[in-house]
Structures are given as structure tokens and as C-alpha cells.
Image (cartoon, rainbow, N blue to C red; front, side, top):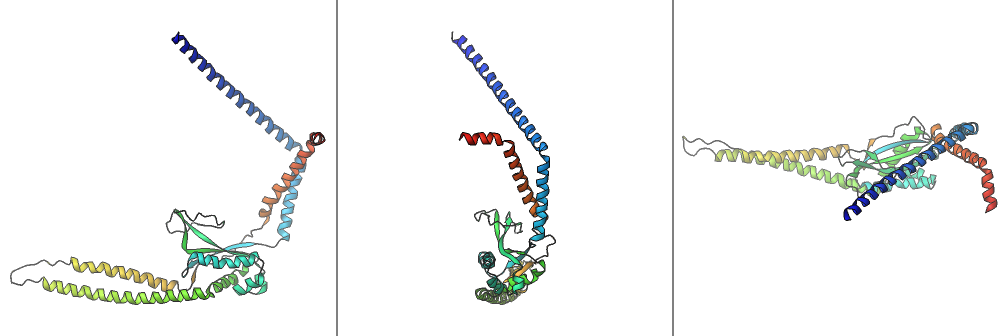
Length: 328
């Protein structure tokens, strides 16, 4: 009896699995047919109403061109600075005061800050400072965090601490040189930045003087060690031969080379990065405006097309909508 019951259970299980697969196939088939009918209905609906939909696209293109002609031009350019004196966080916060002036439309404060004329300040749309992101922590700049969404706790893609990006949106790109000079003057005018830069420069000179002294002392030391060790290793009695070994003397050379490397790095910093900031990449004059025809087309045309399609759907189903409205 137990064997027969087991065979029945197995057969019932097999029937249930076959039924399950059959139902799944039937469901997939129904969904496929429904999707096919829906696609066919949508295609026929659009083809029957190609004229109003086509007119909506043409109107969208025309409106985009009209906006391009009537609205002021907008150009974008970037300036990359090396920060020599203060932390990047302090410098970005300081420069973004200009962004606040632009956001509040405070033309007077903006003009006074960057020392430009009222006519020039009217061409400025926005000024903003951003972090430069180093992906992989290899010391090479990769992207700029324009959206300010970088995770500060990310240990792989890190913020670079020695450079920053300043993006300017302007109506007339010919004014970029004046804006660049104004931004640099705005940075150099801060008294705290000036004091920190003077301290940095003084410490640089003091350290260079100390390095020169240490190099001279090491050089004299290695000469003394060489002659002293050589004299001490001479044979005291005739007929003896001693091989000279200079391991201890040669150890001084590595110290001298290390000091020279440190000195060269400080001299490079003194000569190349004298100011509070150093320009790594100037503003470039853009050839294409930001708010050109394509800028408006990719926004206006889908809007006109979507509104026209919505109106056509409502008109095609107005009887059903009227019945639902009267019912409720």
C-alpha cells in the first residue's frame, strides 16, 4: 500500500508541475497578445492623427527658434586654479560669495568685488567654484563636481586639495579676460589670505636657508669622514695590506641627495607658486552658446508633442469621459 501511495504522489506532483508550466505559458501568451494589440492600436492612432502631431513638432521647432533669437546668449567657461595658501574648502567658500551676489542679483556688490564696470557686470550670469574629483586617488584630475553630490566619505574617488574649478556663465565671452582678472583680484584682496601667504613665503625662505646650511655641513662631514677613515685604515707596520671600505662614508650621499630633492621642491614652489593662487588653466572663449536652438528644441518639442497627444486622446475618448463624469 505504501508503494502505491508513493507512486500516486509522484504522478500528482508531475501533473501539478505540468499544469503550472501550462498556466505560465498561457499567461505569457496572453500578455504578448495584449502588448501586440496595444502597440498596434497606438501605431494606428498615431498614424491617423499624423497631421496634428506633425504640426505640433513644427510649432515646437518654431518656438525654439523664436526663443533662441529673442533670449540673450549664454556662454560657459571654466578656470582652474591651484590653491597655494589656504585650504580648498576655505577658498571655495570665499569664491562662492560671488555666486551669492549673482543669485541675489546684487550687481553693485558683484561689480565692487571683482572691480568691473556696470556694463561688464551686466554680462555676468553666474560665478561658481567647484571641487575637482580624483578618481582612483592617482593624483590626476578626472571630473568636476558640478552638482555638488560627491560623497566626502569616499576613499577611492577623492576631492583634490591643491586645485579647484571656477565656472562662469556670461552673456558676452569677450568679457572673460576682465572677469578672470577680477576674480584673481578678489582673491588677492583678502587680508587673511595675504597674511597666510606672507607666512608661507617666509617659512619657505627660512627652510631653504636651513637646507643650504645642512647640505654644506653634510658635504664637509663626508669629506672629514673620508679622510679620517682613510688615515685610520692605513697600515701601521710595513708589509701589511688593508683594503679600503667606504660604506660609512657613502651613506652620507643619500642624505645629501634627499636634502637636495627637498630644496628643489621648495625652490619650485617659491618660483612657480608665489601668489595666493596660481592659474593652471585660463578661461577659453566658447564657440557655441549654451542656450542655442538645440537647447530649446529638446525641451519645447517634447512638450508640444505631449500636450497635443494628450488633447487627441481626450477628444478620442470624450464620450467615455462624459459618461464617467455624469455617473460620478
